[in-house]
Length: 273
Image 1 (cartoon, one colour):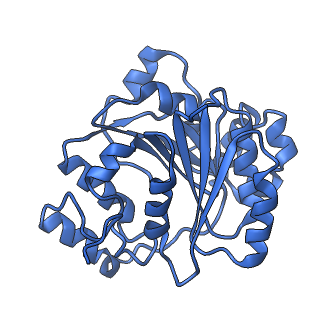
Image 2 (cartoon, rainbow, N blue to C red):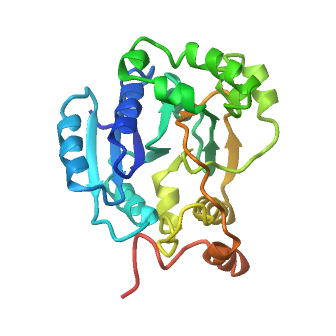
């Protein structure tokens, strides 16, 4: 059966985190999906482990890899888009575990000319270290992790814990999402055709936190798309790590595309000879 959703997971080594993410995918309420591991040059030891993991899950997993020549996340994401079999793509980072309704919420809320933007809980170091695949399999991501994160937030160890509360009421969800917000690169979805219309990600971005997520959002918006926020519906739990610096001088390509009102980038999936 052809998958109706392609989940593109951005990875670079960190196999223990990947195992947690894949385990959270194993218990989704909606299962007609494929997983594409968008690998920005993991080492050969990690690649060998990934090959072993691929056959141990009940869903289809593809591994799209290129050699490590520095930070080239956008380049490998474009290759993953091309490799996807479905016409609907959800983007996930390899350190973000997924609530069991995550894919279902992206799937049922999808609309043409619409980018869906979910949100995430930023876990404390303590909870992140506690997580195991067994805990995930036991349903810890449904309730237990939110309770612990709320307690951690009192000590300022966890952030955005309110984003982990899953809301089933359509009325409350509509109220919470009444204001349009920007996307997180780790939690957004869009139709593949609409990504191809703007030629995918701009591959000139060579640093993280340099506007690469804002750029894809801005170019999609200029091409007529809107952003629909689905906070408290499409929920992620982000494993702890130190925040990456956002240096203004790295925003040059983001600012250039905005200044020139670029929609279709010539530095994307199709490159001019």
